[in-house]
Figure (tube, one colour):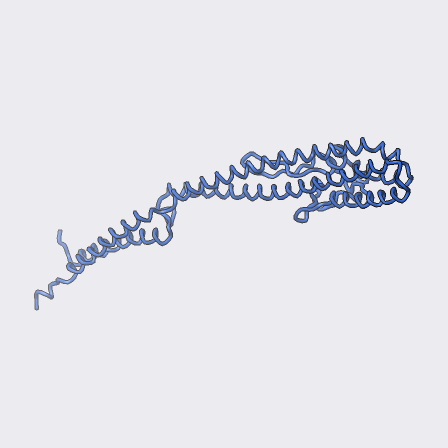
Length: 302
C-alpha cells in the first residue's frame, strides 16, 4: 500500500487529537475533583452516584423533619411545664383558701389571682409554633379555647400529626387539646374544657365564700395534674426517640456522604501522575509530528 503525505498527516492529527483528549480528561478531573463529567465517561460510576445522591437527599430531608418535629415538641414540653406550674399554684391557693383564718379580703385576693391563672391557662391552651396552634389537632390555623375556656371546634384524640423521620418510620408530634384539657375525652365545639371547668368552679366558690366547696375541688385538681403529668411523660418519651433518630440520621449522613465521595471524587495524586504522563505523550507526539510534516518532495527538488 502506498503511503502518502496526506495519510501521514491525517494519522498524525488523529493521534494528536486522541492524546489531547486523554490529557483533557485528567485536566477536567483535577479542575472538578470528580472522576466523571458525563454519564458516558463511566456508566457504572454514574448510576451508583445517582443512587447515593438520592439516599443522601432523603437523609437530609429526614433530618429536617426531625429538626422541625423536635422544635414543635420542645415548645409543647415547655408549655406543658408552664401548665403544670399554673396548676401547682392553683392547688396552693385552693389549700390556702380553706384556712378558717382568711378574711373576706383575703379570699377576694385569692379569687383575683385565680382569675389571672385562668386567663393564663387559656393563653397557654392557645400556644402557637410557627403560626400553628399546637393543641388544636389537625385544625392548626384555629385556637383551641375561647375566652371562657370552651372548645372552639370539635376535637378528637385521634387527630395526631405524624412526621416521617425515616423509611417506614413516623412519629406523632402533637398533643390534642381534648387529651390535655378534657382528660382524654373527645370534645365538641362549645363544650367547656374539663380543666377550665375546674378553675371556673373554684372561682365561683370563692365568690360565694364557700370554702368547703373549694376544698372539695382538690381531688379534681389532683386528677387534672396527674393527667398533665401523663401527657408530659408521653411527650418526653417521644423526644427521647427523636434524639436517638437524629443521632442515627447523622451517622447515616456521614456514611453515605463518605460512600458518595469514594465513588465520585478523583484521586488527586493519581490524576496528577496520569496528567503528567499524557502531557509527555502529547509533547512527544508533537515532536514526532514536526518531523513527519517537514520533509516533502519540494525539499529534495531544491
